[in-house]
Image (cartoon, rainbow, N blue to C red):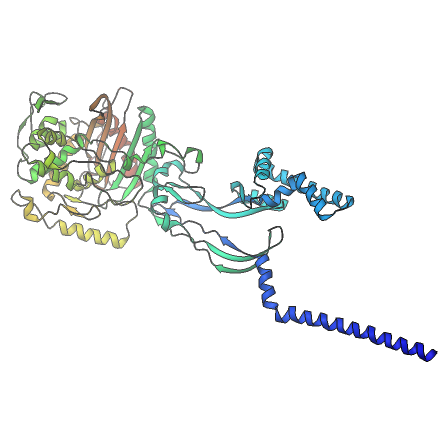
Length: 626
């Protein structure tokens, strides 16, 4: 009997040990399959559920002025977004109840879960308080979009605030690192630099014109996220982020400062609709200052709307008026149709042309070409224009760049309009001689006056600072054109090309004529001229005033004006050209010499001082004219 029981026990043990061994082998085989055979497959499958590719934001390139001052830079900024599908669960009791039933949770488990949810909701409310968001509106939005996976709740959040949100560790809340554009000069350079939208894309000014160049290349990296979507580990960089390229503008921040504040004072003083001005380097065509009032602060998004965004120096066109007269005199002199001592009879101060009455401010009698410019005689300019053909007059205006693209690529540029000379009648020829019948923008007018600073050569304008190589090449081209001159009163003798590019240096008139007309324009700023208030003690100034009636449908407004002044200083060897327009001055004074010319003086006397430009005449004391 004992032997029988002993045998049964051994048999039973053998079966048990066999089963244990078999089970062990099964587990071992499974482990081998998982760890060795299917290792790569399972790892990839796991990675798909945990490893995510994240973008690394790249900052835009900086924008500098010609002296290296920062005008635009990118600062780290964050956006807070949520996964409504995750976060809505903590805010919706119905979802919580359904989950408890589905998971067969006990009463104790439900109570424990509710305690945790209560803490999460408390942190959620604290987050909204930190972000300054309305709890009711955000919660309603989250519940309405509970099946969505992405929703911004706050953008442009400063890093210190972001850190507070991160420390709260609210489920379903994520941080998106970004950059925000900051403009140190604010509204002083708002129109030139422009601004970006909330997604850091250029919308206006340089930011838009050179958006592709300034935009950085985003990088990519792999990270491991937990079930709640939080990044718990870094895997590797896939593509490094590359910052955008920087840009150096031709703008001089110091000159821009003086220009902006002088325009703002004039805007208030004359209760004008707008005031705009531009300052060029007379020798290179570089834009040193360009401002429009009213302006805007690109750092304040509440201001980024409406007409104040227009850079009126390039977007608004107007009939230039009397500042066109020096070009007509120049052409007639170049063609040999008049001489410096030619007498033009402007009496009695009015004349009729094709039923249209043209007048001067008074009867100026007999005038020389210098007198026509000094007294700003419409009659004198018209009679000089009649000495040439419409085509010759048109070629001069076209030759200085009126009605042409300036090649600076700033958004919103209007090139103006000037009809073909074959359509001109006699009244068109007369009107064009004193700046009516065609329109231009202010930058075109300022650029045209560079011919008087460069002995008849027109320089292209640039909003970017020219490199040493570019300046050398431009100087060579300028010097080459100086080898030519008008012969025998016939421009064909020097082969003038009327199909030139606006970005190319070219000669418009002879050096002799340009210098003669520059001298004539100095009389405009004399005590007998129309721009006495543009005089700067110690410096010779040349320029031309304009008081232009604004157009309306079918004619002109009788009491609405553009007050215009274009000046060059020092006139003995011009370094700066400044053109200014005051749109609708409404305080009873509207003449260009009384409204726009004083702005020139205020700005340029500061510019000449800070740039250490030596005086070119013996300082004399001038009484302030009224």
